[in-house]
Image (tube, rainbow over all chains, first blue to last red; front, side, top):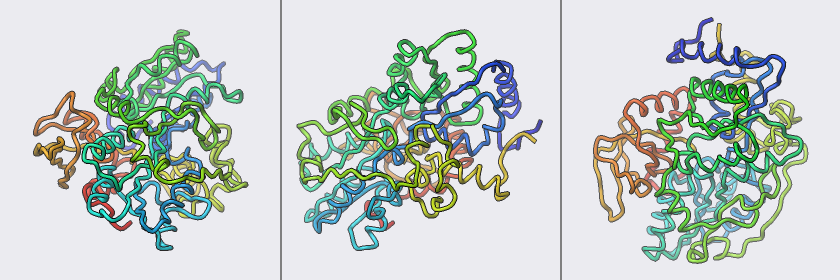
Length: 376
Length: 93
């Protein structure tokens, strides 16, 4: 067996792989979910699936913020963007995500004032430098980006900047995991916990998964060795009949998380009673909105928002793929109508979406266009 | 957006909010330190940056690992585009 040199510590990787093969009981079928889209990307990129025994299946979770945002929210945001006084600011990741009437980028081509920002503070700067316009920041992301939006809003409030608002689509990871565990067609043995979300929330919020649901969860780093070690830790727990929260990514993730980030989120946001997720439907207390004290900077209160609900294009099966019920290539549109160049669904847009990851690595590998790092 | 980009702090700035001039493979940009106020970094320290905010302090070795990881995922161009974009609000896409 030989790994391509790009894998540092290839001996450790070989050892972890052998340990996985030793621990996996051939009489069992293991279904482990990697919650985070960054992990999904890494798993495909490194061809980890080919290193794992065939009775160990990795299920891709809901941790891709662009992918889980229902199309109606994009349309609501873009409708406000069409107002002549409004500048629509969003991260680059959002720009190619299709709404019912086109993506933000396509709206820009039609003359709508759409701007890419790389930080929410830059959207606030945009408001300072355009006092005659209203800058609406279309905020997306889990707990990795929500604290930055919160701190930006605290600054806007402290400075009394009136021509700035946030169209808040921030979601929280724990209720999504709960919804997946509650879903009757989903049988999982354990979770690979998200890395960067956990730098903010820490490891405590996962304890119920172990205690109440009896499932092991290991917070993991992103390197091939990290992921393989996390799988070893999960298999050891399953072998011993344990269900615990373990932290494989201790070098970055503190058990208690980032207190300053959590405090900023608590100051600015409160939980919505419910929020719609693509594929998962309405999940109670799964998303954030601005507190009353920040109503002046809440785009949904400053403007009237239609609250449109748009179903995904009928033939696209984004929801089933998001839930892990279908593999990307099982969708009827995969690789045909829907490709990274011409995405129909959001899972094909983001590099963390499982369809794009599968297309860029597995599909091209099968088509002979890509060399993947697997054992020779 | 979901990239965690490692950078080295070259200068601390008070604006009046805590900021730092951070270097990421030769590119220098200001990042916000407001989410690290419990554990303020010093000049020379390494941090992981998300959307223009330093989110955690890391070691130099972890920073190198993270940068290599980003390159292996083919995200190095996207990461540098993000870093170059900090502070240049509203740039044309």
